Amino acid sequence: MKKFLGLLILLMMIASNCLAMTFSQPIEIGWIGISQVSKGAGGFMFKNETYNNGSYYTGYKKDNKDSYGKGNVQFGNGSDSLYVHYDAYKQNKNRVNVGSNNISNTVVLDVFNTWIYKISTDEGITFYAFREWYGPDSDWIIVGKKNDGVWVKYFYTNDVTKKYFAPSRHGASSANYGIPTCNGNTIIIRYGINGASGDKKPSGEFRFKWDDKAQWFGVEQVMY
Image (tube, rainbow, N blue to C red; front, top):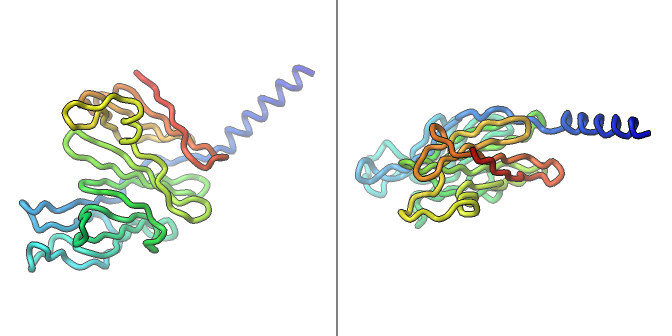
């Protein structure tokens, strides 16, 4: 009887592992930047977009042809395309809405020098990872579309920093995060502290494991 129960538990564990959602490795798909007035004309800049219906930004230069003022930009193609709604004329000039083509189904983000990565899964769910990178500081925001079609923000490494690390005395981030890797249903992001890079001088890593029942990510810290 004990052997039978042990075998049953083992089979259930194997089945559970087989049923777990599997993530692809992150692929860089685009970039969003804010044109600096001292070097350019203000407004938004993009790389690798597939569509942009915006007009050029004329807040500082009427003949500007380098950056955009207001519109909607698309990254990728098909049902899992990512849309970014932007408006450089509003008060929060670097604030955008990301997610659906319908702005009412989007997530609000602040961007400045922001690289976009795509993480696909074997269950058709797609996550987008936004890397905000300025000087030594590097943070990630993970967004995606739930099964009901609603776009949400799953986690922000700046919130993780506030929870796990003491505040920096100099205004910079206490932790800087490297480019994620994926293992099964887990997003792994290495971090460095005291100004170190999570890419080159990692002090540890955070493992964001997908909980299929909760339809959300858990978090585990591993220190090196």
